[in-house]
Length: 231
Length: 205
Image (cartoon, rainbow over the protein chains, first blue to last red):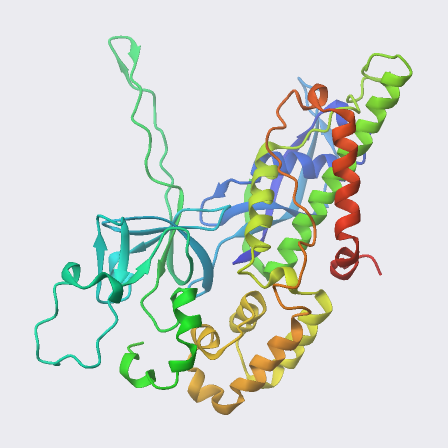
């Protein structure tokens, strides 16, 4: 989930910070620059772990800042592939489920990674899974999911804690590009909807999904191993 | 900016949580000092001034808003009830990792066992690939090792350190704070978590 990245950068320390310990001033500057931001192909920066190397501070022509070349370690959030995470359901719609970790909420479960068979109930604004009925005739047509009795449905409700497996992550670097002018007036572009870092997760496996399902199903665990194993 | 190594090492949730909590208490301590100085100045009838030599006004604690947000939210996530992180100790984790040695688990699997502390078969099943073939009847041993590494049941643990919301401290934080309000909150925080804090702190020994 978390890892350390080694980064190299040049930071400027303001003269008003010359009085205190320089390491503290450098760390504060780095945190100001990186904390809670996405680094492309690296992940979400949480905070500076430590400063491993710092050169002599140099004063450049034009300002009174001390410029340090530093090598430092950053705590990064980037779950690795196939890692299991605990997250909360943030919202659901026709295309899937969005999860949140409080500090990071661009985690999505597309429809294909939900437990099968599933459907989205627009009245409840939630997805549900219909557990296979052992008594059903195997040749019978699959039931229409939205007609199923509500009591049989396994809901994935908003706010529920779910266990998910990370399938992939993607970085987008949408540059704003040059400013467009029309008749001498700046054209304001529509807001970029794409998040810079998204994680795709899956629930389609034994043991994944709302934790409450599995805590309740603990006792029956041994029996259904063969029936539902699809991994 | 240059990325020398995007993934130099993996961190467990516990390490991140204790780092963030250290930052948090460091910040609290500094705010407290700054506030004391301000109070003293007011008592002496001085108006807060920038110290001679042009240093930063000591009554203003400057911390990046982004850092406060992300660390507050991450602490909230990591110390949530459904996470085992708050019930772990550094010694117990070291011991757990050592005791997992004979089972031939990969590094990633061990890390996830530490992070998620699986309590039953199904939780272990999602972490360890081909669990039946690789562990077979030794699953129980692993589970009991995990169980032993958690000091207290999650329900028994009092909130180790009360988290003070980082928001609502805009630019005017310095002027707006009521002195008595501030003092109360500060000491309350210290007293409440003192016992557990000692347990969790790594650098104290």
